[in-house]
Amino acid sequence: MIEAITAPSTQVTEEDGLFYITMSVGADEVCTACYIYDKAQRVVIIQLDTPVEYRGNGYATALLERIESLEGVGPIRVISTSHAVGFYNKLGYIEVSPYVFQSSN
Image (tube, rainbow, N blue to C red; front, side, top):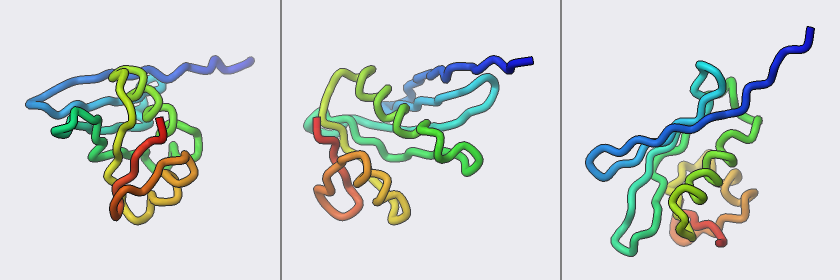
């Protein structure tokens, strides 16, 4: 028997100017993010998390692309941690200040 592959779905909620987006596959949350708008009306992602067991599957990259498509703005900024610097570099993000990266679009 071939197991059916479930496509990821996303849900966005907003509370007091904070936007939360969750990517799920079936009942499992595979990636989450929280973002705001800065004074220049740029999207600033202040938290992006993929549980360890789901890393390496492209969920964080897909979630960043989904945020860009939903908000229709660019470029977006991401506040990073030291262990995620390589991830943003790999995606082509540019470090605009320590641990703050900006998409190239």
